[in-house]
Length: 107
Length: 185
Image 1 (cartoon, rainbow over the protein chains, first blue to last red):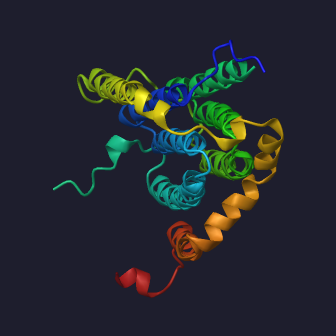
Image 2: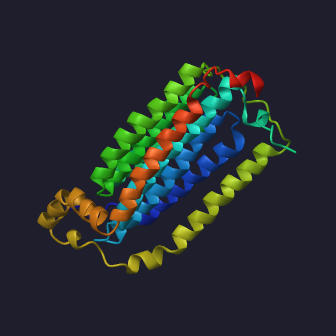
């Protein structure tokens, strides 16, 4: 086993997940298409999942992190389904609406 | 070898993530999202989470992104967005500040906790190669044992969640039937 070569440690994975989360945050804040905002939320969820898996590996025989990722996957699937349903309902009434056009509830 | 896998998968993840937020065409953004999701799946395999890697590819890349593409193409919103429009002054700069702040803070936290992580006892499978193979085979088994013993209530509740999501989506996406009461309302 080659131990002298740098092996990516848990910290590397955590930093990568942080960068992925930050990119997703910027996307949610900058983009105006609601579909792409939803995709950026998926990016952020994946970053958190990566953190969970990396720490589950680091903590050895504790598999609770992977169980959490499993639940996050289920909730993400449900979230996407409901979010896309809402977006379909909105875009059917206002084609090509951006997030800025959805200000009907503004007082 | 691990370093090579990490660099390749990390480049996939970051390229895809940047692609999602800079491509103006929604279809291109969805395809960039697939690249990111595959990179994360590779990371899962590298972190000995084989079951989650398979689920990631099937559920995310196979189902969720296809759902996105369906919505994009069925609704005909696949027109490129003009990215030069900036609705609020300083919005981009503020977003960059927030994103950079998040990245910086979490990175500092991760790096400063490096010494604490080093104190954690290493995997028992690091010692002997044969044990490592056994733990590879046991990933699904261990996950299932944890899921169906400690978290069985949460597991059952996810089924409720999925049913509620499906029913709610059908209600949202269904066109309202043309009923006589619609004219009065």
